[in-house]
Length: 483
Image 1 (cartoon, one colour):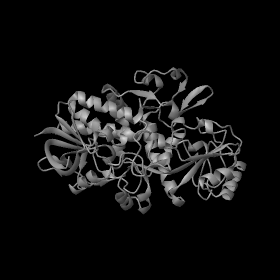
Image 2 (spheres, rainbow, N blue to C red):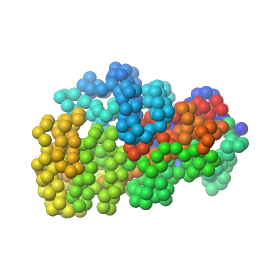
Image 3 (cartoon, rainbow, N blue to C red):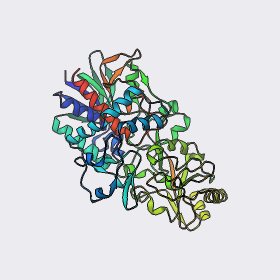
Image 4 (cartoon, one colour):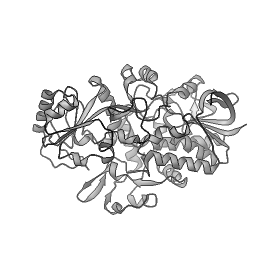
């Protein structure tokens, strides 16, 4: 054999598999489809948030980088029961119970395992907390992320893999899987190369970057969605796995998608701005389409539980375009890293009609929408750190954080649908072994990351994707090294 383990894909899941195999003494080759300057998969483009269980903030003290704000931080406990409940609630009960138990039960230990590999952590004040009563109050079951976001995560993963002796080959596109005699064929530099190995770990992502596969599985309108992350996740390796006998699993008709800058490159993310192109302060504003009509409950829940499904709602609007609107009262509360980024599809005006004209919104309907919204707000104290019950009794309703849009200047941000990753994948067991259509493990084949189907459907709890990648990557690497 050339190697003991070949890992296909160089994102968070693939590197987690490589670490896990290497620490067991395996000779590991990691094949990354993108050239080195564009590597890191979707993980590179994330904010680096990880969802995991813990009992209190003191439990995390040794994990987090120092910050003077910690003394004033209110971080509610996130026990396994809450993680399970969130998974069940946001997926409508369609999360695979076996895989969900693995994800939840191993989440905290896996985060600490990554810390042992050199991954560093911080509380995400700017993304997950609001000041309330002089305290930084975290909500939505999510508090921690990697230092320097996805960029930092991939840099630290890469450094750890190199120290472990993992061989990384960039610009290596896998074109064949060889299960009978174990190995893969990949294309690099215009030539085909074949390597043999004791086991294979597939960590090559979903099909979100392929307009054709999106249209086939998600619906024709998805061909025009913007790709938030890597343009290399085109589903080719997923198709190779299915052709080799892997059982499909999970929801192939939905995906993670969110509000994304309307003027972004539709074919792939920005390596410099990465996650700054998302627009996720919508719970404290209103969102309208070009006709000036609202179409979602912006305050249905904390952002962590709605953002991954609202991209789909934007795509359904005329032109696949929508607008997040704020005024002088709410503008200071917006996430600076997202709403102060440049370039940005946005406008500012002294009146709503002027804002509508600048953004291409029907001005008369927008005026009616704003008036009806403003007049319907219940008398409750506004507090963005909690579900405050300050609702707008309109159709659709706004369940929390309703603030009248009535104080100039007015601000509008044009958003489209940014697809993050697809939910359908291959079926794996609790050890990350790929199962065939009869439910039996395929010898020597493991999978992790976005290639694992069955965890999410229609929606997902924020920060769960990176956790899943690391949890199942760790399992896959361990299993492959022992194959």
